[in-house]
Amino acid sequence: MHISPKSALYFRPTLVAIALLAIAEPATLNRACAQTAKQAELPVTNNNLNNPQPLNAQFQYGILTATTNTINATLVPITTTSGALIYEDLTIPFSVSEDSAGKIQVVAGTITAVPSPMPETGAFLAGNYVGPGGGTAQLLTLSGPGATSNGATMWSSTTTAGATGCTYPYSSSFYVGPLQDNPLYSRLQTAGITSTAYSYGIEGQQMCSTGNPWFDSGSILGFSQTGDLLTIVSFTYEGEDDQSTPGDQITYMLIQP
Image (cartoon, rainbow, N blue to C red):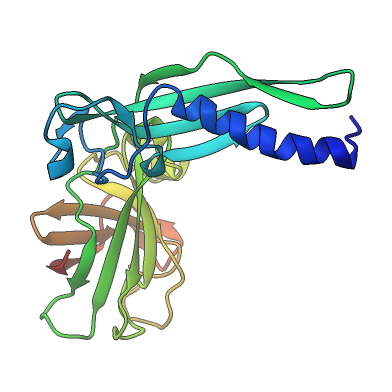
């Protein structure tokens, strides 16, 4: 379809305006306090939200994606009149047409909303960690959660500024959720790894030789957390030989959330 410059100028503000109206129609957007979606309904601690108030959808804290003629908003916090939060996945369809004058019209269809599958966090705590001995040689920062599909979450670890390049794992990423939804599931199956005691991921590029063949780049790693202690185990020897049980582990302690 050819759109003249004049039509294009009309199209852009119209599309933006209609999209914003369609999103804002069910609720009044406001700048409320963001909260991590750990369960279906969470008490709101922000004093501005404690008292009964109109319903509002906090799209700024949801995850916005789009496909052709559709805007998807997942994990959108919605404040109820009782001052609690629920989380909804919204689908907003659009139809596009062109009138006889060549003007593009974009019309929002019926918005569908379903309860969000709640992210699984596995008790992991984002923050800065120190390795065995409590010194400055091994420092690690755990970041997350990031929402993925089916309520699973993605976490990542990197070395903290000031850590030695031989900190291990130097970098990693892992997933918290059903084992069969893990992107590494086929590799886990091949290795015979079935334990649900860990959340599984993979080690990134190791910056130097640690002298430990169980923490090389590409190793399957398992993560678990108990209180402030983050335990990382490796199932791969020399980055290639996957095992069904851990071959080595290292434990970090949270020092700064």
